[in-house]
Amino acid sequence: MSKRYAVILAAGQGTRMKSKLYKVLHPVCNKPMVQHVVDQIFKLHIEEIVTVIGHGAEMVQSQLGSQSQYALQDKQLGTAHAVMQAKEMLDGKEGTTIVVCGDTPLIKAETMEALFKHHDSQAAKATILTASIQNPTGYGRVVRNDNGLVEKIVEHKDATQSEREINEINTGTYCFDNRTLFEALKNVSNDNVQGEYYLPDVIEILKKQGQIVTAYQTEEFEETLGVNDRVALAEAERIMRNRINEFHMRNGVTIIDPANTYIGADVEIGQDTVLLPGTVVKGKTVIGSECLIGPQTEIEDCRIGDGTVIRQSAAYKSAIGSQVNIGPFAHIRPESEIHDEVKIGNFVEIKKAVFGKASKASHLSYIGDAEIGSDVNIGCGSITVNYDGKNKYLTKIEDGVFIGCNSNLVAPVTIGKGAYVAAGSTITNNVPGEALSIARARQVNKENYVQNLNLKK
Ligand code: UD1
Ligand code: CA
Image (tube, rainbow, N blue to C red; front, top):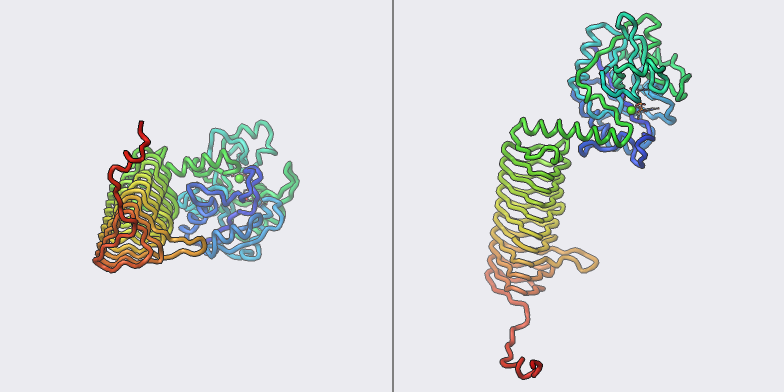
């Protein structure tokens, strides 16, 4: 196998997106388009990956980090000009270079592998990945001669009426003999409707030199979608969503309504977990097996154990154990650590709090900046008073504590092991272990008081 190189084109502004965000950074299923491309490229045993950046260069670079080298394209003069910027890194090297557009997020490693194989088997200098699609508007068309051999690619805007009737499109992915590519790029002109240096022109140039140029037509036309505007973005999202959902279903996850379930590209889910409609799972979330999630639940960057139930709730950047019961209508904010068998009930907000095994906050609570031991019961309406307007303080509740309903725990404060706090207390001092703390006004009943007021007629 000859050495493989990759050039990813990601310098365009993406004018048709009408967006402040650079096109290739627009997310599809919660992952930037260019990241999808790089993740697939990574599977292909590539010697060197060069991403051509321009618009939003720094942001693209910080997204991809050390996964790629970078070539800067100062002015976006076209796709051929873009590839030329990788010359410094790749010129003169022996091997095959795959060029992929950063705006084709659906392309799969398998398809690119097949393209490489086809290219090698034909001993070609250039091989275009093509697809036959129903509505080719906007794409470059593959013009073949009477023998069915590729002649050239003509851009939609430059195409004649009869060329526009061709359904076979250039997907924007190609394999080139690396040296031949950089030689041919010197001859590309910008004599066309858009005044740009088109990479596809290399095909006609090589053809005229009598080099072997082939096309590999993939059946997987859905993979080749180029995202130029928000309509195509939504289409890519739909296709990617189906693909991800299907992957999880084949892995043993039940998805009640796949059209209404949104799983990020990097999410992992265990067997026999059930996702109910309206579930959105994002980021690097890992969900264990036999969980029940949803309906209408959003989870981002969480690790969740097995057999946990999360209904109509939101959870972010937190660790959640096994056999935990959350919701309905709970909010787990970042940096929380919820251990096994915990119950977080309706209208409970948790922030940066540790909940030890089997502890409960079943109703109407705010627990922020807290360390809660195991087997603690937090009564309805109780809250941690963690903020004095300037600083945040810690509340510590040790194992086995019982906090009566509607208590305020004014931090910093520690409730010792096994202590009881009477309902309605406002606790400002530490409570020793095993103590009962009552911090509220004593009840006074004034007999016959109402009658004496003489207010009733
Ligand atoms: C391109 C192809 C077209 C093909 C289609 C497939 C050309 C001239 N046309 O058209 O044949 O059918 O892709 O989706 O190549 N870019 C740069 N620098 C530039 C210009 C573009 O880095 O100077 C990058 C863009 O960021 C983008 C990619 O190249 O990721 C493709 O550019 P775009 O303008 O979207 O090309 P299309 O018009 O879609
Ligand atoms: Ca495009």
